[in-house]
Image 1 (cartoon, one colour):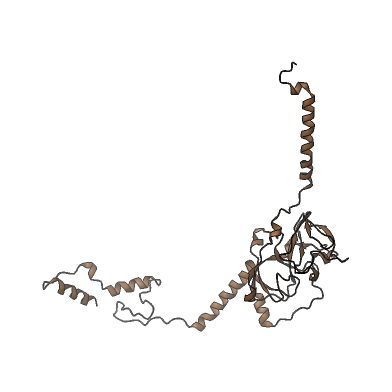
Image 2 (cartoon, rainbow, N blue to C red):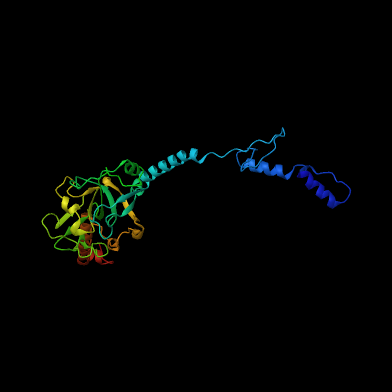
Length: 321
């Protein structure tokens, strides 16, 4: 092919043969093969079925691609490792088994829980929907599913929720230092400020439940704990109804698996789970020391002004000493 190219050039340039230049003595086809080989680790045999002549003039057989069935176990192994890493450090799927979070979540929904941010020291915030491990037998008496081997395997890699783990899902109402209270039928208050919960509380429910079992309460959230409630207030055994356990109804922050961020299944229910606007107001509890200081400042200024006006030595710039 290279000789044909040289002959063609000589025919156009006249009957007189011109000497070949050194750079034209290498056939273009050989140069292409070297480039392709260098792209594949320097293998001069090339790939894709292309044959190349070696120094002995023999044409080696092209390499046969590895069988798909031989590569399949490797691909499955990589996929399982990635799924396990994602489940452990990034995102995990959970199934909603009850109606305690209606209408935000329906029974049978699958939610994706962010497990990454807690690794960076992030703690639950008011208004977030969180999944947490059972603090102290909250799920006692609930039926336990009996998964088969396939379901156990899918649970292990995070493609299905684990049947062995006792997890719950609720909304965070109060964090460490907050005073949460509810009297009568509501409203629910955090540090004395009422929450407008119409956007997420189940239609027809009142923020508080009038009963003697925990529906009426006033609690202060201790350090390292959160106070949680279900959106279906009249159908949720949440912090209110576990005030007699060892944590007094509070959930340790260490028990929190992560924040539920997306309803992923079924497709018709796909949605995000943002923090409701009512939690955007300043709900922080003022420290007692700060309140005392704020009350003392006007009194000190008033007393100082009174003493200054009554003392001629201080108030008169030209007073003799």
